[in-house]
Amino acid sequence: MPENLIPHVRRWRRITTVGPVEYHGRLIAKERKGFTRARELAGLGEDVTPHVLKHTCITWMMQRGVPIWEVAGFSGTSENIIRNVYGHHHPDNLSSAKKRFRGR
Image (cartoon, rainbow, N blue to C red):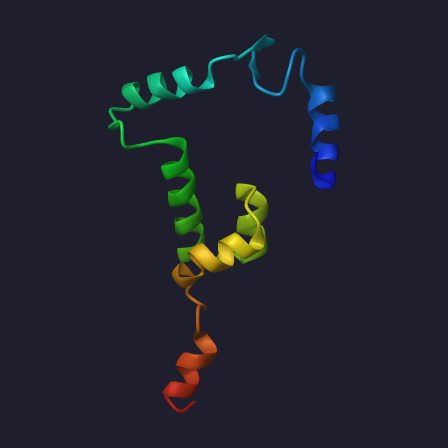
């Protein structure tokens, strides 16, 4: 287990009754089934998956100029992945190069 997850596991242990994925004290054993039902109720197509929602969330955060380290922390994704995969969405992307190109 990665060292940085240990505090989270300890916290989950303190605040949960039966496990990290529960609702009203009952373990949710079928998260995928629950997501599928929620997606259906929202009227979304099968192409909407947890991965697509995460990708969209990260993209929107970057487009709004949220600092990379905050996006990484919020999404549980490394800063390197955020920078390399989503960095071009950030308004500050290549800002220094753009200024130099314009002669400023």
